[in-house]
Image (cartoon, rainbow, N blue to C red; front, side, top):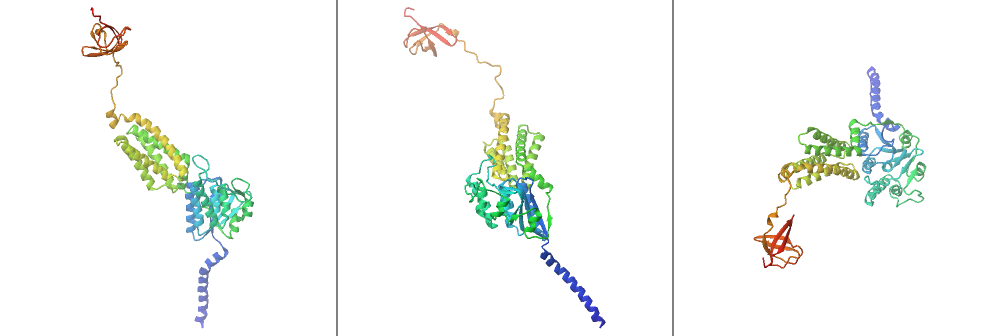
Length: 443
C-alpha cells in the first residue's frame, strides 16, 4: 500500500516534466512570440551593392533563426541602383518568413520596387511611393525602352506575386501607361491614395504598429548591424571612390613602366587596383574571374611594352583589363563610367609611354641616337662653271636645259630665244641660277 502511494507522486512529477517540455513550443506558437529582423533603408540611404549585400546577410540570418517569424524593412530612400534593388526584391519574394515593408517617408524609384515585393506594405502618415522611371547612370537621361521594359517587368511581376495591381506598379515606371485618374506624368501615390486603391495594406504610426497589423502580436525586434568588412565594401564601391582608385592605379603603373625599378608607383598601383576589386568582391559583384582577368591584362601590357608583339599583347591586355572592370562593376551604367575614366587615364599614360618607348627594345634600335645639331647643308659652289661651253639640249625660252660635257644643267638666257642644239657659254652664276649666252658663229 505504501509503495502504491509513493508511485502516484512520482508519476505526477514525470508527467509534469513531459508536459512542460512538450507544451512549450505549442505555447510559443499560440501567442505568436518570435523575432522580427529589421533591415533599415532609411535616412536617405541609396540602394547600392553594399546595401544589397548587407540585406542578403540579414535575410540569411533571419531565415536560419528558428525563432524568427518575420523580416521588416524600414524605407526612406530616394532610390538607387535597379540591380541592387532587384537582389533585395528577389529575397523578399523567396523568403519563407513574413515580410513587411514600412514606408517611413519616401519609397521612390528603386525603393518602390522593394516596397512592392513585400508581403505586407504599410505607409506612415505623410509618406509617398512611386516615381520609379529608370535613368541612364552615365547621362542622367531616361533609359532606353529595352532597359525600361526590364524594370517594368521587375515591378509588375512583384506586384502580381503579392496580389497588388500590376497596372499601378507599371505606372510607377512607365509614363506611357498611366492609370485612370492619374494627374502626375509619372505615378506617385501618397499614403492615403496607396491604401485607398489597395496597393498598400494600411497606415501605420510606427514600425511596431506595422508589425502588429501584419498579424504578429508578440515579437522582439532584432536589428543586425553592419560589419567592418561590409562598411569597407560599401565605401570602396561608392562610384567616385572606385573611379579614383582606377585612375590613380592606372597612372601609377604607367609611371612604373616609364621608370622601371621604382617600387613606390608599383606599390600604389597594386594597392589601388586591389582595393577596387576587393570592394566589389565584398559587395558580391566580383570574384576570382575578374581578378584573374585584371592581372592577365596588366601582364600582357607589360609584355607588349618590353617585348615587341606588333600590338597583339597590348590589345589583348587592354581587352582583359576592360573586361575585368566591366564584370566587376555593380551595373552596366557604372561599368561604362569606370571604363570611360580608365580610358582617359590610359590615354594619359600612353602619351608618356610613346615618348619613352623609343629608348627601349625595338624602338631604340629603329631610332637615331645622334642628332644633327650644329650641322648645316652647304650650297655647291658653281662659280667655277663660268666660261664652260656646251650645247642647248632643249629650247631656251629663256629657261631650259643644256649639256656641258657629261653634265646636264638647268640654265637661263638673258632673255633671248635659243633653239635646241645651239652652242652656248656660261657667262655668270647667280646663286643657283646659271646664265648662258649663245656662241656666235664668228667666235
